[in-house]
Image 1 (cartoon, helix red, strand yellow):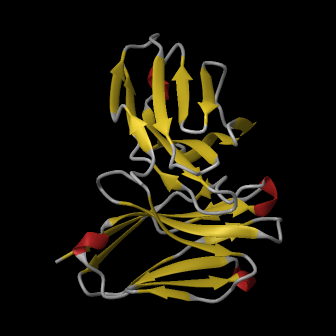
Image 2: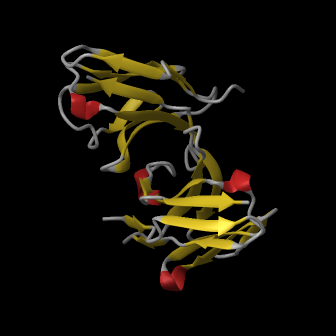
Length: 112
Length: 117
């Protein structure tokens, strides 16, 4: 398997623009996670899905953030409108229930 | 609330030295999972190990070993005969079993390990 695939790897956008991050989990995994890494807050969970259903979105910082998982092989994290403080590395991870998560290579987002 | 503390922000060693990375955790759950992940300079997060709270057996994998002690709420990671390729940030993480998944992770702040020649 190719592992968790995220796109794009890097994204630079202007404040106020919409940003969409994409993730393809490992085939067969039924849980998907979005994490964010910043210098100030470290690694934090934003949202996770189980069997394509959002289970816990308590980590989503505000309404500007939304995530979807329309099917078992694809998820998106959208920020609209983006702000400079959203600049971070966003990781997608997938797992089978009660097993370890495998992470994608991350998307480095810069909002200018 | 759960918490993971990695008190060592940065460690620098010379190649072939042994090094131990400390991890202390807090949780109210009796069943939980502990993890170590490695983040090399390239930025990805690489899974190293998962332990269940009911399994206190120490584990060895090549030059890596882990010491899990429930009595002190610690899950320390030792690299024996360190190599330059071990240079990375290492994260300890905790997940509570009652969440229905093992991967709703609370991460520590990480320990940056620098191995020099």
